[in-house]
Length: 248
Image 1 (tube, rainbow, N blue to C red):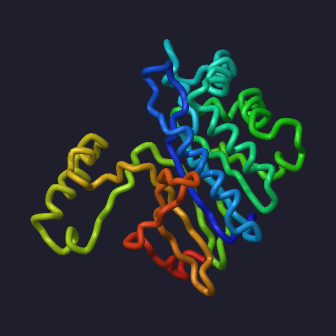
Image 2 (cartoon, one colour; image 1 turned 120 degrees about the horizontal axis):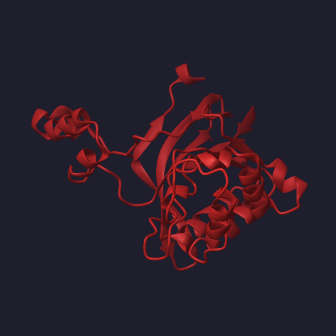
Image 3 (cartoon, rainbow, N blue to C red; image 1 turned 45 degrees about the horizontal axis):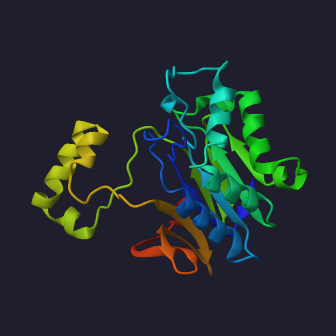
């Protein structure tokens, strides 16, 4: 099991689709964020988890669920699309840096990544022929997720189809009137119901970070923002929380 000092997780990038119909349109911004994780704290052991739906095979024209015969060609189109090349190039730089670990998890739009030939094409695109780079990649394709230890806490990352990153602060939780629409949205059990609640769902690209901080292990949300010198990862102080010892 990997022992890390920092773990950063992003999910549902959905790289794929025909031009003009692509969900993901922040290639340079995400590439800059990955580069920041590669460059900062060079002596720390840093993990980056791509926590499901890295690519979107279902966004391809005429797509069908689970396409073992066409998946490599679909992946090739995603790998060579100029809109996504900054991300692939940044991931290639990341796995060539010491003390860096890249984790690729499975989602419901990229299940073909579990197929050996598809997985091999993806890994070669990121690692090339470098055995050192390949040794820094973990592939979590069996549905059980990825486990590691950050500081003194064990952390599990897994993908879920019905997920939104939402903000629930004390004011909402303490006020029946403010919480009522949130409760109804959760009761509705649809993503559209959550999306309809004003300012509930995080809209900016957000990364979940877990770091060892002295004797504690803390979590915080970061978002990537363009800055004069490149891209900065800006923490949301209000999101900071300590992982309880019961998770260790």
